[in-house]
Image 1 (cartoon, rainbow, N blue to C red):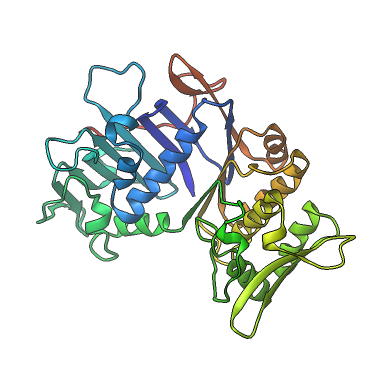
Image 2: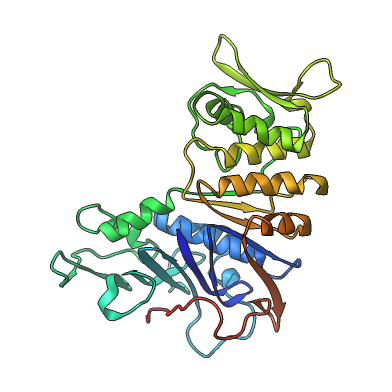
Length: 368
C-alpha cells in the first residue's frame, strides 16, 4: 500500500507531501490542484510501469509541466516520489539538453530505497544521469555496465526478479494500479456497444470492454454484490448481461415500471457512468491501487451515497484514492473512515488545508 506521495515542481504543486490511507479522498475547490495530484500519480505509475516519460510530451512537454509560480534559484526540476510499506522510489526530471526531442524531459536521477526513510544505508538502486549502480547480494555497490538513455527509466531496462528485485517489485506493483478518469458515456461511447464475451478481470481505462467485464463478474466474481450495488443506486432495478450464440455479450437493465430491459445504448449518461464504476469496483482481479478522478461526473447528487458505498466496498479489496469536488461524495466517504486531503491554493501553489510546515509524513528528496 502507498503510504506517502511526494511531488515537487509539477504544475501547481510547488512542494506537496501527503500521507495516503486504505481509502483516501482528495478534494478542494476548482483550481486547487486536485487534477495535478491525479496527473502526478498517474505519471509516476507510467514511469514505473513502462519506463517512459513520453506522457509529459503529450501534456506540452517539460516546460508546460514545471511549476509556473515562484521557484528557487536551483535547477528547473519536476520530482515525483512514492513510499510503500517496503520500498520507496523517487525520480527527478529536468529540462532536456539540445537534441531532436525537445518536449521530452530528461531523467536526471532515480533512487530506490528500503523503507520510508532515505538514508545512505537504505539505498538499493541509484541512477545519476546515465550511470546506474545497484546493491549486490552482499550489500556492496555494483556499477551496471550499461548506459541508460536520458529519456528512459531504469524500470524499463533493469527491472529483473533476480538481479534487481527492488526495481522488479516496484514495477510489478505499479502495473497493478488502475486509473479511471471521465469515462465516455456519449451516444458513440464504446461502453454502449455489445462486446466480445471473453474473460475480462479488469475494466480497461477507457471502459470500452464494459459488457465483457460485467459478464466476467457475473460468472466468476461476486455476482450478488454486483447486483446489490445496482439496487442501492436504483432500487428495484437489476443488471442483465447476456451472451448470444455468436459469443457477443450485451448489457441491459430492468427498471420498475418498464415492460422490457433497457439496453446500454438506451441508458442515461448517469446510469452508464454508475455501471462503469461498478465494473471497476467489483473487478475479479482487484488492483493494488484504484484511482478514480471525479467519479461524480454525470451523476445526480442523490447517487453520491451509493457511490460512496461502492467505493467503500472496493476499499476492502484495494487501496482506493478518489479525487472529487462533490461535497456529498466527500461526506459519504468520510463516514467510511476515509483519509481526507483538502487542497487549497495560495500564492500560486497548492497546499493542504490546515496543515503546517511540519505536518504530514517525513520525506527527503535524493540529491542530483
